[in-house]
Image (cartoon, rainbow, N blue to C red; front, side, top):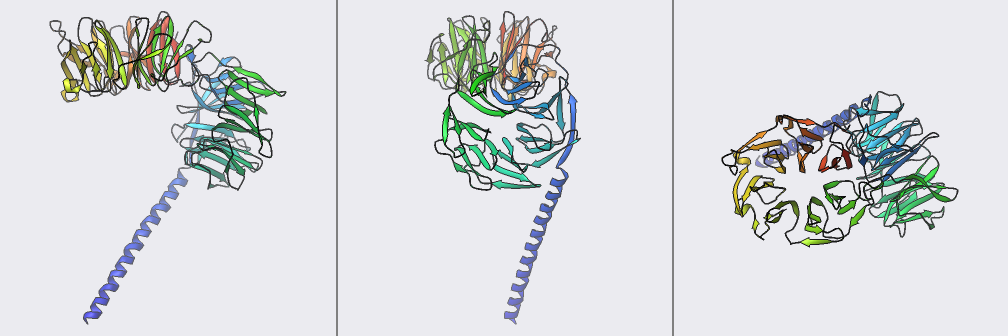
Length: 603
């Protein structure tokens, strides 16, 4: 009996385990089925075409001059890239929210463009319309018109399709897309950060590639080619993609006239039907390849060229632009009558605003990269960058000290003060940090009052230095600041203004009898939640300008009671630098440079 009881208990235990497993499988299956139905329900989303108003006024804007895509009609020639959307007459994109374009194609003969910051826009009748969908902002990197006249959109958010005149847009695949192509049968090939995929007949198939990160994909006949971080690879449709020997440094490619072209280590190579390469000489270093309207184009630092009658000719001269390589500005200053630009992801360049094409001179030197601040000093420039502090005398760069990454600079009666990631270096060589009473170590902003305090803005509060000691500090624990992250400081009409990262602007009021006291901090409610950019509280034209991250440019009202938006077609609403000039205000952004007249809002 004991044996039977044990056996019965074992049977019951096994049965219970099987029931539990079955229940678990049922729940998983139910969730999967539910997810499938949910996906099916969300494949389509409303699509609207909303007209964009033209800007009230136009201002000079400069991007990086690069071309990412070309579109050709019998009547017009369009380019898209770092200097916006352009035709033979000039820039067309002043009405668009940002400057830098990532993709361009023709849709039923009309240009449609994507902005790097997000958004799709169709131009017809000489005006722009925004394609707004229920999928939210789409960050497209590739646009293509299918053989059936549909618009294919390869984006960070996936692969989308829109029919001309339709009121909905479909999401075909959720995998991110950087490049698109289709074969003669209409199958779509999409390459992106998670691999190469073929979309045909409503089915999505993953294809093997030498590396899962696919930067470009192209199809010609039965030839499939991709560029990955491992270089150029090609193979037959349905076959294996194999690396092309000697093409590990490929950066751009396209199919044209039954040949594959690729840029490899700064050289333009052409591959014949047998796969044999030959070098084509280009008037300038090639950067990007593309084909449109039955023509081969190559973008260079000197402009866009096209192949015609067996030779290269200029298709579009490089517009007045920033130096090739970057448009993300970190700091601005004047040196010897010229404009110096420190780049967020590069070094330093100096150009002449009065020259038609600026005549840029790049300051050579590994001592400067990732520029945070520039300050005129003794006929040259003091530079704060992620590689430390340095001085540029107009010819060469000389490193200053060895304090690590530098973020801010201020001039005091005793000399330069430099804000580092570990604290503040005073002119006499002393170094103050949180150990000495500052609210934090990283000195993002510095401001010297005339014959007064030296203010230090950090991510954890505001500090004040008097002489060589910390006089006081204010942190989040004191609950007097709209936000303790102090990104910028300015002195206007005897009062200190604080630009915070996430709390907008506050004004410090100190008693007349004791100007060195902590005082009170009065926020500007209309700026609540705004993220101030470093160094973007600047006095100009008798008022105070405030640059924000993604909210645009503001200025203090005449009565000093509030900040008002400045309406102007800036390259981007992400302001990164502001510099007063004799005849205007230079505005640096993460997509380029603009010049704003001080007499009005872009007028």
